[in-house]
Figure 1 (cartoon, rainbow, N blue to C red):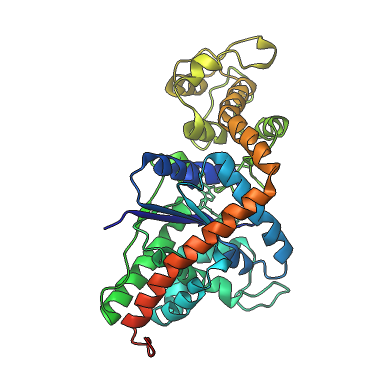
Figure 2 (figure 1 turned 180 degrees about the vertical axis):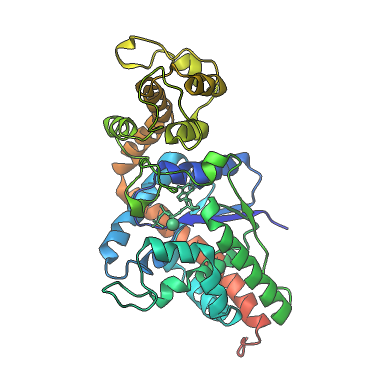
Length: 363
Ligand code: ATP
Ligand code: MG
């Protein structure tokens, strides 16, 4: 069986470092590993419209922003198919048929849908001056199953918040195959292997960095902006003096270091503290954590190190983005070509699905 990847992002804003550690970094590694036969990366505009129906311009402009972030992060159109969801109408058709295999109660139980309804402030009843839940939004796990199965994806690299989505997809595949005969491929989720990357918290310490919560460090943020955001981050509120013992658990600065710090950074950025009045003299993150716990490691010193570590990853991405920004017609062409390739792949699956469902009347 071919090894195929499908994953993607909603074009509701530029991509941030949570996307990077949760999925994007892994995609680039998998792409460059040569272990996969096909890689499909989708900009999920149709899904983004399910809760942004009144703001199509936002989605339209962010398609290019997300594509720029992809190219800047190292996704290569020669190796990966980058495409736009709405340009593959077969996906909508598949969703329509899968809807018959899922109950309303099952969708209501989906923990990600529940959490996102709450985060977006939708009301169950549409009362209290709150917006009601759009039907399209409520059904988006089904549309995600269509996206994944259309490309016969075996592997879906995503953050932890997507786990219930994958489970729902697997259920739909099993139900479809049991009802109509073996047709669809059951995908596996591929989660980040470190706890910090499963769900990177926001700069405000909230559970998830998310475009919708405004607590993000964007891949395209200039170095000064990254420093402003890092400087404003919460650490341990009880850690007032440098000499005070501090908490590492739940300290977002350490969580980001867990996600981004590599062994070579200790040599490289030992003198990162501004003014170089003191040095960050540790050889591993464990050593730094031990010192922080014991007291004697100041927040500003720690943040200066994190800033250097983050910029080590972000600077090359920023530079590549600047190059691609000069040639937007190229970016559009990548998406146009990718969408045509994706469409062909999805059409084959749709034909199989219709045959299995015995609605291939004229073939
Ligand atoms: P929105 O608020 O519009 O839903 P988002 O920031 O949640 O946007 P998505 O486009 O929904 O981003 O998610 C894209 C991918 O990035 C998914 O695989 C998701 O699991 C992953 N991801 C998003 N936020 C994080 C995070 N904070 N930590 C780890 N992975 C994340
Ligand atoms: Mg999301």
